[in-house]
Every structure is written in structure tokens, then in C-alpha cells.
Figure (cartoon, rainbow, N blue to C red):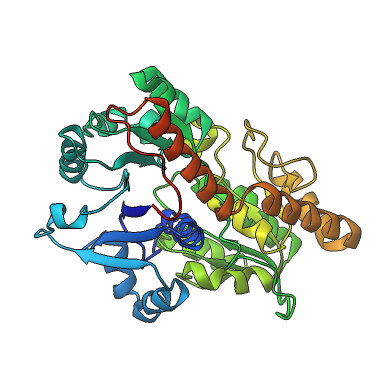
Length: 376
């Protein structure tokens, strides 16, 4: 297949966790024999912020890390007919402009021969449904929803059997254990402070336990308020700033444990959807303690991570992992096994190919196309 993908950013992961999974699954699509072209806006906010923070070198690394993937930046003069020429599969991410989404959908509705999928990786379907309503998806063949609870919302909107659960996963070509790296931290957290969606939780499940246990800890990420930075530094935690995604495995390898603190909307309204850092941390062989969230889809078997219902349990869990070598090793082993058996980007790339084949051969598409394969 010739796969043409429209995402907010591929070269930049600044405050853009979607780039992690995008990079991983296109790597695997390419390895399966498919041609992949990724379009990103030249003035996308993630890319511009990365440049402002001195991330040019990190973005240049991407071209070397993903050989064979065509990365094309576009501006307002994008020639969409040229971009879509010869496409067999087109995926449009929900961070694109409503105009671009409608324009591509219109081409499909008027006879374009590609299969067209909408990729939704956000909580706006429940937190801001008016924003989702801006998107004209009439010409789309299907929706890729990054959790079953989100797929169910699309079912209620009339997508019937054309909405598919397609979870994120770990790009294990990048995220894997690095035993040669010395563990200099007790705890590491890699994530963005964001828009207040988990500020209180980060204090309860990260800052306060680290301070009370007097642990060596580092945090990495962006969009930290001055108050948050002061609080973190007062707890003796080192702030490392923006950490490009492909450098994160070294940070994980340099620590003995990490924590998962999901954003509020996912805990309240979208159970079963973890942050991508859960997949990546387990793939890197670091044990994880999670703040409350519901693994509603049973993504992770028992023993792959430790749960903490409150700050006291987080303190006990971290202390147990750091003191009990057997518990530490068992959690690492279970997490690695879960990722390698079911949550790699190769799994998701193969699932995607199956979804497209199913759409094309089942009559769910308004214009059924020929059966596809890696050489199509």
C-alpha cells in the first residue's frame, strides 16, 4: 500500500505524545513492505515550540532514525491532489484543521479510490463534543479510536461497525532495556504538567512521596507553571525540561522506578486508556506504580505494574519496589512480557492492515476497493 498520513507533527514530539506512536507504527508499516508518506504542517505549534527550545538537533535525528519514511512539511499552499496521488490508505489525525479534514473527506466521497480513516486520540469526544462536531467525517470509511470507550461514542454517533479500537503501543525499536546505563535516580517521571488536568494528582502521587521518602528523582517535560517548578524543586527533584521522545529510554534506564499519573478526563470519562508512557516504561524494563485508573479493557495482566490508591499507598509501593529486589524483578519481567506479547507497534501496524482489508472486502466502505497487501 501507499499510505499517506496527515498528523500535527512527526519530527517534533514537544507536548505531542501522538508523535511517539505515529513514529512507531509507520516504522512497522514500512518494515511490512508498505510505502509511507507523513505530512506535517510547517508551522505546527509542536514543531515551532521545539525549535524555540533548541530542539533542532532532536528533530534532525528523526530522519536518521526512520529511514525510508517520507516526511513532508506543508504550508497553506499544499497541493492536496498531488499529496494524495496514488494513495491506497489515507489516515487523518484529529489534530488537523476542520478544513483539511473536510477537504480530504470530500475527495473520498466524490470517488477517490483510497481508504480514508480518522484517527482520534483525544478526550474531546466527551469533554468538548462541540469541537468534535466541527469535523465533517461523512466521506470517511472508518474511525480509529484509541480506546474502546471512545469507540462506543462513535457507535452512538452512527458509525456502527466502522469504528475500531486501536490502542497506542510501544515502539520497541527505540524503547527497550538499556542495562549498560547506570541507575542514578530512584524515580523518574516523564510527562507534561499541562492544563491543570492532573496538577493535584502529581503533587499527591509524585512530588510528596518523593520528598517524604527522600528519594533521588528527576522529572522531564514542558508546560510547568512557575508554582509547579518551585514545588518540585523544593522537594529536591531535579527538573530536566523537555526530553525528546527518542532520548527517553536512557532516562528510564537511569532510574529504578517510575509512576503513571493519568490526566483527569481519562480517569473520569475514558477508562481503559493509559498514557503512552505506560507502554514505553514497561518496554524499557522499569517498574511502574500507577495512580488510580481503570484498566477497563484488561490491557495489562496482574503483576505488570503496582497500583496506588492514594499518596500513602504510593509511598509504600515505591519503598517496596526499591527495597524488594524480587518484587522489582518480577514487575519488570511481567511488564516486558505484556508489551512484547501484545503491545508493540508491530502489533498495531498488523492490526491496521487487517482493518483496511476488512473495510475493503466487507462492503462497509461506500466504494469497495481491491484486496490489499504489502506489495499493492
